[in-house]
Length: 146
Image (cartoon, rainbow, N blue to C red; front, side, top):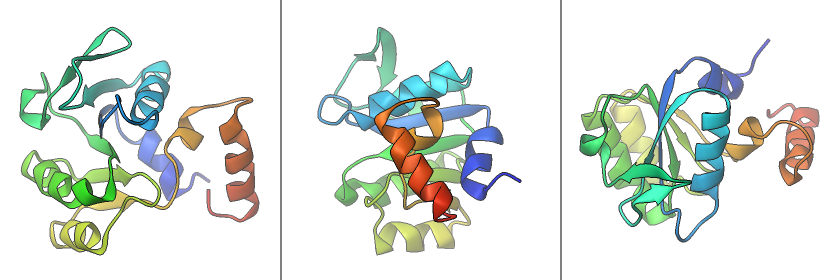
């Protein structure tokens, strides 16, 4: 039986990956992982114009189509503001990258009726096979937190 974290990836067809790809690797890794699974994915990065030759978007309003879910790969200080923007855009399922959630963001998500996955790295679920993430995945499975 799939966990709620595994279902997050299975249950949605389209995603926005929100982050600063010029400063951190995780937005790019998550974007590539989703793309490799065949999902519809848009990179939202106010500081970049492209990822891997694909256009990025400055905000959710600029996306060419609505998305089912979003992945926040941002510094903690930006998470709550993006939660509000996601809710305003009708996105109710959000993955917050490990250690970047805040009490304010989580409270806001609860008030807005959003489904939030947090506490772990999205890339662990999107990078099959042998990779540095396989050890993280293995440890999480043993601890029944996958």
